[in-house]
Image (cartoon, rainbow, N blue to C red; front, side, top):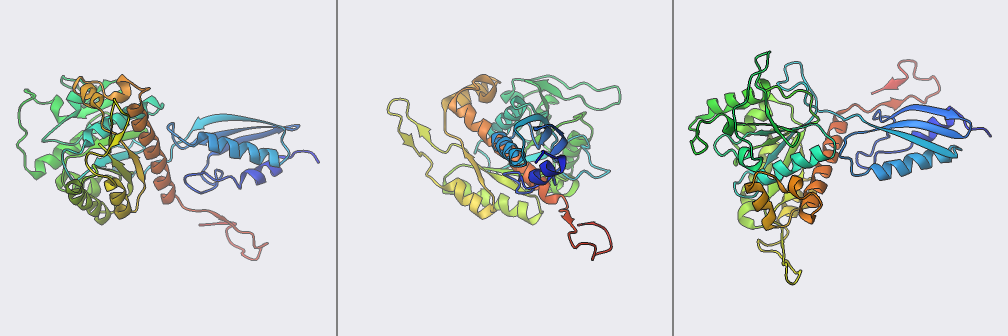
Length: 369
């Protein structure tokens, strides 16, 4: 029996995205299927450049085509990100995903996670921006080693600074003195944040990472009210004194209906150089407790390592400075899981299509939502 295009389509219809759990064809990830003799050529569009399950998808697609009778299968890869809902008045219409990095508490390494995740996404091939939304304690200028004043574009927008291919904006770039304090009340904070979103020329980005300040106040609430974010990544350390505040951040996110992509446990453990033993200096299990409370996955556990602090202070985050080290790979893995979870959340917002197989009994539309 000769191989047919219809048989290939039927077989491919059963292939699911391993993370989203819906058919690739339904998600628009299969395209340009061609049959020549016993050979099949098709395109597969991943939902992110940082897809950690590309190998699994490739194996399933090949197996489906072979089950239909194909002897030779050629896959042309592409990327077609699933994006957040973007309204007509969205302040960042060219940004497909806005990722909030939040903790509810200071001192847990939220900025370290945000900067390294942003760079890891960039190194995966994504177009990335990083907005330092902590107006009182901006960290991005130091951690990226960038100082200077942003210029204006011809259209009057603010041109973000850039380093390592990541577009950057921070209140720290606008201060005359890097030791000066920002003494603003809530309305001024909200206005500055919205200006950084609306009046900065972010262009077309796959991900805009927002490094939020501690607490559950004006900044987080403004984002919930004015911007359709993809979701939030919650950062914690293992000890109970940190969890007490992080739980509050999770509760706030649930109350304002911001999806929680997952939890990152920072400073999870320390590996001794001499004996190789794992020391859990701040206790164990805190990240999983927060993840259970948030009903979201634990995205990763980042070990303590002096090089993270050293490179961050030097203005080159560890993912960029030493990409092959275990600590950098831990951040890379977290970034890939964040990208994957963003695709899952965006897919859940998409309508599900069902095929009318009643044989004509339902005389209305053949495809129903």
